[in-house]
Length: 143
Image (cartoon, rainbow, N blue to C red; front, side, top):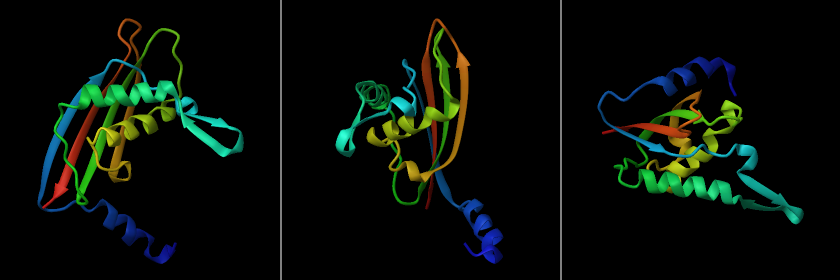
């Protein structure tokens, strides 16, 4: 990286398009995602398999998000807001949850790529009676 141009590159990344369309989707998945530590199972010989728990969460994202409008394309960027409500006794580091959620959003075609997520906000709460994941996606597409 050329440090002389570093400030210019960072500024260019933050520049928002002057004309854009925006759209927001919000839905709740009545599950807590498994930690990234339980996303993929590793076997001898370098075989990696997505865990059943991870597959179930991705399917839930699809089911509960399928009626949401999608907004995609190469000029689309996203801000994703996650509120994860843990049940009694559930544990998890806040940084271990978003990977599976973003992959689920991509697989459900709510976003076109997790690489297009420019802002990720995560909050962790406890709700013993109602564990869940609330997902809000703000999409912005330059015209």
